[in-house]
Length: 404
Ligand SMILES: [Fe+2]
Image (cartoon, rainbow, N blue to C red):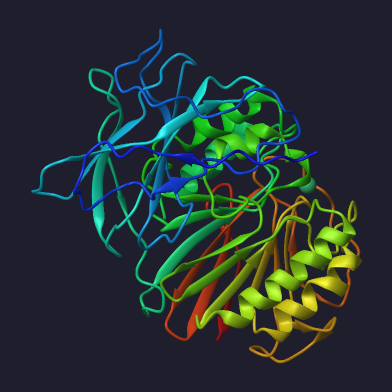
């Protein structure tokens, strides 16, 4: 049975600061199925264990990316100091305290410091830890204000599973294009409660994730493990949520759910997409509604419950993983090809390391299919989006554009 963490009040370490924690903050609202002690530790800024130096420091989003950020990192279990110093160039550092927690399947202690009242499109420097045990200094740039018509570049990849060496090499390639953020379409690991796999997944992100958000989709191989919920800081319940980044509205769904939950998410999505005024609407989840992958094929239930909601609400792009190859559909509406701009293009990006699957079903909805490790770069610029898929060596394997 799922249970919710009690609301934990984060103490504000410095008063009257422009940057502060976000009041009553639930660090990770859904921590899996076990019920052992996972309460956030009391904040103690002078308490350090045997390995207090922060590692896997990450810039994440658990609220509005234009105004809020969550810095998270890991230490040994006994280190309770959870502090971030944050500053803009030329100004004095502000100290903000957060809190921390452990979970059952290893991983030491996870520290989270939510930052609020940030300015959009603004670069902040920071370091995490506590006095005498600070991380290196990093920086992040907040999202442009929602609705602003600025160019956005985001990368998409998925399905590292048990081949983290390939994921690491792929992320090295992705970094050379300097995306604003990364969308990972699920199955980061082979078994969600395997901490060694999560360690390797996050090791690959060192040098990138300190300054770029990685938005994670929950995949079926995450198994709703507490490692997933403990190691991410994302909006809402951390698996079904939406956020805005400049002109982009991104909605993330959890398709590991039951048919009943999928139907409930369809209702949520309809309200979410209906309410947004953003020019660009992208949806991401793990299992493709449309796929010619020989192993899994299409998820026909999702064709029934989610695709109509996306297509009726003008979603231009749907990104998934799960079927280990690259595939791009023709623009679809109700399963039929429509003119560009009148339907949703379904893209499978599932080549971040997992064993590749054949793609031989040759459905009429398939425009392009490539069986190779890959990532996708989407550039939104005004009324057009250019989407480029590249293989592990950086070679282009597909390119298309979408008009809004
Ligand atoms: Fe999967």
